[in-house]
Image 1 (tube, rainbow, N blue to C red):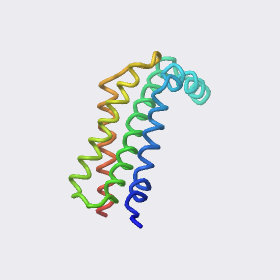
Image 2 (cartoon, rainbow, N blue to C red):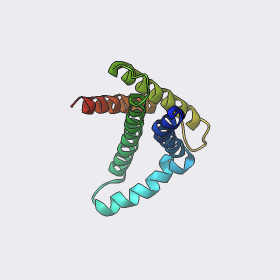
Image 3 (cartoon, rainbow, N blue to C red):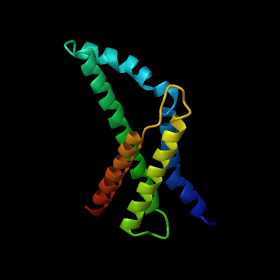
Image 4 (cartoon, one colour):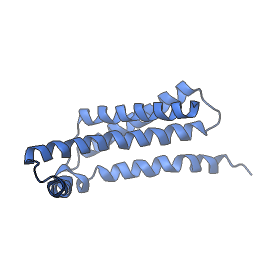
Length: 146
């Protein structure tokens, strides 16, 4: 029995699952207005001296770090799947392919957000996503070397 299709599914299902979660995060449910209504009161209770402007800055920072983190993880999952995929590619090839997959998905995700009424597409977010993918891939490859 050829186990190649099973191995491919086993290696790539985490990538597809994580992409699905990113897609969910790109819906109106996770718009800035919705996350601020959740995060704002938490920050106000933890840091009563924070002004509204300071809370907005923290909220924006958390959202941008979320973009970075989503794609850091996506790139790790991609390079991990590529690492297990025969024929084995060179480290550089895996790195480039993983970054390309994550960046293409980031681009499609921003395009998706352009159709969501409470969201907007942002090239800055796509660049943050791509930077997260680069960091995630390099982190994974460095850990593989150690």
